[in-house]
Image (cartoon, rainbow, N blue to C red; front, side, top):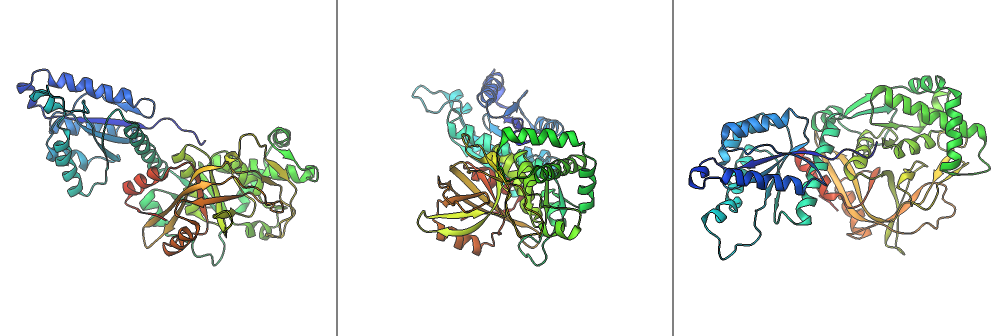
Length: 465
């Protein structure tokens, strides 16, 4: 569920048709150039480009077609000069994110350049005209200026494509909610604002639904998963077969619940399971397995974090993790992250098989919940938190790395040490000042640029700390 198809981007190549009478064949030449651009980006995105937009009517036609083709975004490239005002009507009917790339056929102004060479390389002033119009229309857009042959250009288009895909994901996301912790303030959100601003639909359900799906399971399916776990995990000899079966049944029941409702994320409050009376243990195993499957998850009814985790999987194209800050470790200049026992073990080191342990947990007042322990893969990482404001949202982002430390022998919960690029104390101080929540999503790799683009597309405040 984490991996997706390449982003689909429409290339809007602009050049006024008045040039053809001055330079016969320029449109054919620049169309070929547009095809070259599309081919150079094929490893990163699927580019649609069939014709040049040479006038207002053609621009409106192409933009309209792109909006009906299920594309993720539009990349505007000035193939020479094109009038900015010709974008106005096209943009009235456009619902796709926009990016403008100021690139040229040639990277160097050669001494033998003639007027034609200068004309086809003069994209900057056309971009100025068009970007000025977009700005005055209040339409957000991304901008790149540089060599079309550079890795920076390919990275820009890839980031734009994945951010645009992430926006589409949010617009169609449904999150299942099973209870919420009383008095926990930073998880509270305006549900209508979340739906209006990002498209995330919040769906409140009861634990009776989960119980029904568990009761309907075929016992042979549970046994098959238990056997697979012997390959998937190092299993604690103290873990009873019955406890293991219950955990697997919860995982399969939750999975059926998500599939039946087309939910891409869920959140459940642990107190609800003890209060309900039909559950013998907390579904920590289920939450961990479902995160590894690519679903979004957060504890205690935190809808925004659950949606953000699903987005984190998607936008980074790698496993993201639900976690929270525990303490600053001054010796390693890092922050210890942990939670009650849920963790995305698919983000663990490749050569280390996770452990499935029998483990005491007082929260919820139920039997020992089987818990998956693993070592988070070290390396660059991006920490994000979605903060609910008055009718809108703020994304808090911290770039850094997961360090190679796993020596807490008495910790029977998945944990990791994250070292922010900005320094531990500074990061925590600014996190608090900006209202960063206590539930966070940790994405593998440096994907801050993708999140920043998505925030600009949705006009959400973006803050790096």
